[in-house]
Image 1 (cartoon, rainbow, N blue to C red):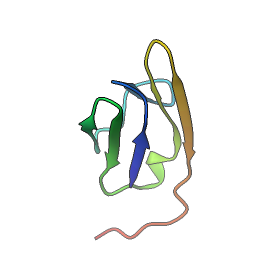
Image 2 (image 1 turned 90 degrees about the vertical axis):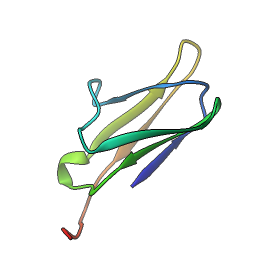
Image 3 (image 1 turned 120 degrees about the horizontal axis):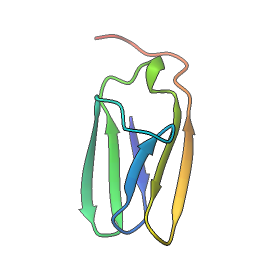
Image 4 (image 1 turned 90 degrees about the horizontal axis):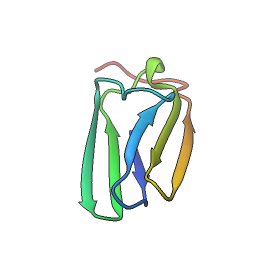
Length: 69
């Protein structure tokens, strides 16, 4: 699963805390950052936020089903 953030150099949080261990941040440019969640499962449901001093945005993610390969 990939979440895109269009905020300059954001700080990412999950449910107001640290990101889950199966996440990785990819920076495409100063204004485009991708948060990738590998093998997303039910435990990855929650609120993901990216923010800096001037802006913030939040997405609610709900995992309703997945395959465990």
